[in-house]
Image (cartoon, rainbow, N blue to C red; front, side, top):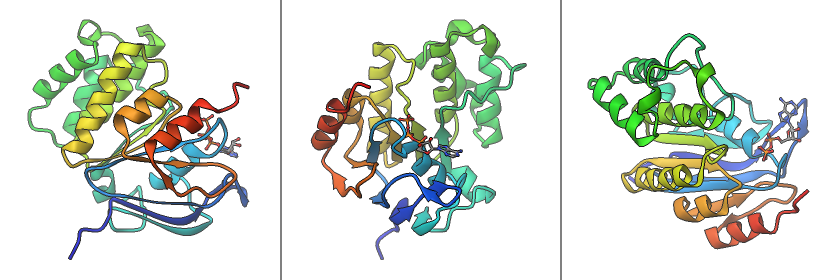
Length: 231
Ligand SMILES: Nc1ncnc2c1ncn2[C@@H]1O[C@H](COP(=O)(O)OP(=O)(O)OP(=O)(O)O)[C@@H](O)[C@H]1O
């Protein structure tokens, strides 16, 4: 029997206070694949991610994550789904290294010290390991959140505009890491406004917006981003 997809969304209706924010959304994400959500500001990308993470109840349609209805309170769900949202979620009194160690140990990583040392290096944070979040730049804080997303085991990685506030070099390094994640059998779902990141990472894309989109080739989605109105 074939394995069930990591995410199956069929005619998903999403909104706030009974008002849908976008046309119904349908896609399937298999292990070993990366899918991007694209669309202009306010089109509903983060809202789709919230539903996948169990932070928003769909108003209609079908949504299965890891073969079951989403329940973010379920320990099995939380153990397998890592997310990096645009929410600046830090403990103000923990250093950079302490954040990463807490995340790794909290998810049962045996060699947490080694994993954290590698992540500090990869994300250019080694020199800031003992610094509190308040003393980081906005890009360094973003690097910390991203590193935390990789500090723990996962089958599904969900990222909301991970390119934000990163310099070009870190964007390229992140793109390579996300592609490696999928090539190693993980599943990646990301919302992005960056056509270069999209092309480097994703196997396919969904255009979220007023009109229901099929799953698109990445080249079509990159063209859609590049033709978004500038204001
Ligand atoms: N908590 C909320 N309550 C009510 N409306 C909301 C809420 N969060 C978002 N919205 C609305 O839902 C719509 C979609 O927002 P969403 O954040 O999903 O867009 P997005 O595509 O991620 O945008 P961006 O590219 O700017 O991040 C917007 O019109 C927004 O104002």
